[in-house]
Length: 258
Image 1 (cartoon, rainbow, N blue to C red):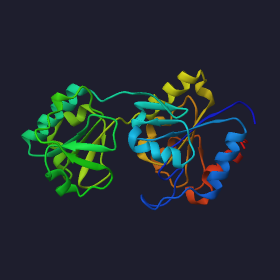
Image 2 (image 1 turned 180 degrees about the vertical axis):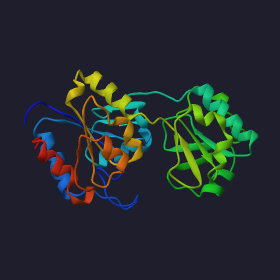
Image 3 (image 1 turned 90 degrees about the vertical axis):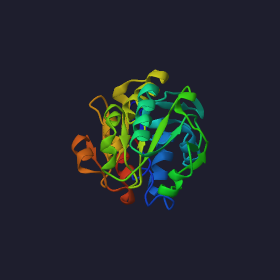
């Protein structure tokens, strides 16, 4: 078995197959996770989702440890250790630009499963069901100590009018709106391993998508799924088979971790 590993898994397209809302974890992946635990390895999820949005998912998948908030937060043994917010001044500056350009916006000032918006127009434009949207009349970002995420509703390329976007991490998952959120899973992984007194050379990461690029680094072993984007495969130490073709199980057997 060798040294104890600290193994981090992205979720969508890595641990779980299928479309959102119809996802499932392959039986071979469940078996691999079981054997990894039996062999004494440390397992964690590494997700861009917020702590509140990922907590149920973590529990459903049988995990107790998680890098979340795109690397700005960690949970160990089911206990939240910390979450760092975005740069507050830059977020407020960005929202002011949205107002000037007539672009709809929302914020997450708390670790919750809902976002706040100033009026009904955000939901009417996006019809988004990813998370709850609550209207707070007179919503002012200046009233909040922390801002964890900002949501901007517009079609591409309208966001190019927002100069402050160049100063903040963001990603578009939906055509109707984009997320301004942390995107540095490497940071969260290092924070967790440091907290546990581990060695970076014993870290293993599995991923498939663009938001996993930040955690594919030279200090540890990076494994790309067969269904991963080409850019991630080029950075990987090893490319396994697709998530639906026993990718995690095959990689763990290849490296003799199980």
